Length: 405
Image (cartoon, rainbow, N blue to C red):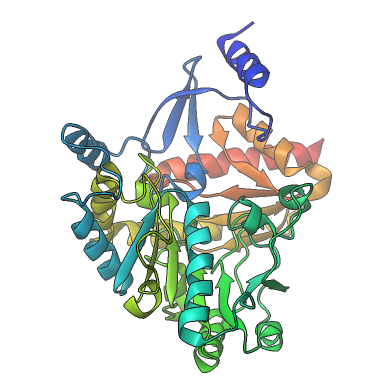
């Protein structure tokens, strides 16, 4: 048995089977490349679902973490620490907001956003107790907590976890009229992904986000943008909402905020919204810890230069041009996305998304499937054009071989 097979067999025997990973066992990584236990190199075209926007082992982020490790890593929120105020100030400024509530994971941040919207609805808008409603979109992926899967339309994410949390109205993604129809006096928020990642990198119709922004403002409803995957440079802008010049009432951030080093998430909003929280009503032992703040501060500093956003925009244009050439040739049905982020619908007769991902793995490229014959491509923003082109050539080779079989 090889080292890879042995490691996979051990993991399968000892861990719950809540994931179905590709059969590769990574032992080290740098930039856009990963190396497995056998010494084989793989081009990472997934980037931890955008958690690794700045690449594996980014030296600036590693050095920031190492420096903080030598000082203090955790105080809990029972005390202040010397990185906390700076982190909140810098992140709020990056977002054009006033206040930050830090957490750890994306799901925690979404839960925080839901709780904040409800509390704001009761304390500020005057919604009767227990009657708050939040409008969400079908096809969403906001996390996997019990409350979040309560408004999922994905059977795999939702099945067998009931009873489900009430208080959510699900409407079709991209349909503003459906949002307007679903709104009542008890609606406190509209929660959307500016681009739906797990659904296959779905980009909404032009003007959708801008109209949602207008509608929520008119109806005194919070617009919450889940930018956990789409934010922090992935689409060629700091936030995907910027493509429509939209500023929501609340950003939900995670993944890339931790630089691929530590889990960091946050809800960022106005004082009028986040100011509804009082001591003891919501919290997290590790939320806003010194190590997380140190790494996130370096991420914020890197984003301020604009170089990563520009790189994602320029390489993203190249990526979509090249992928667009594959459409209609008998192998690819459609390509969607923005920046260095694409969903590629493979002709089903060539294989499932999982099968295409496995074939790409054999050629040294790591991607991930979602829903049938769709694969997602989201390399680190630091990937070179040469490496990106090499990865795309492997995809073309896999598709050509499938089309000729």
